Image (tube, rainbow, N blue to C red; front, side, top):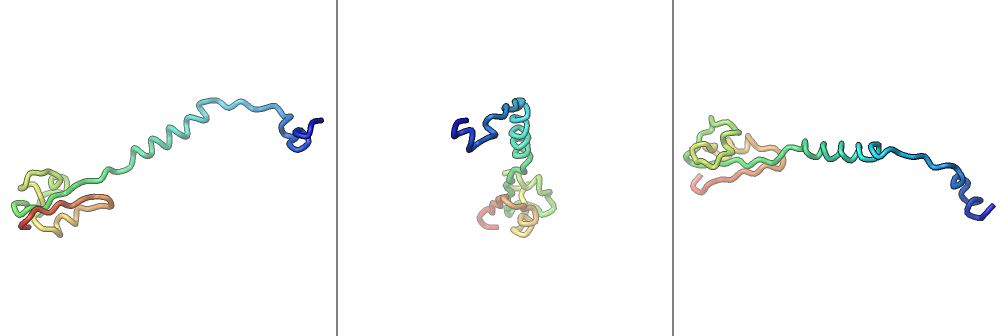
Length: 89
């Protein structure tokens, strides 16, 4: 017996074949999970805005669709979001 076989007896055992789908499936699954991550949003505060505007509406760049106060904008924020405050607010 060769030295390699003495050191690694498992090298003499037949190798098992693994289906390509077994290898690819976890990668596809993980890539799919990364697509589920929430996208960061940008909210606007403007002196022409209104705090009764919904957070979805406050994502618009139209001044009247923004939140009126900084606190109104902060209430919309989640981790990673941005709050843009117009001058004069």
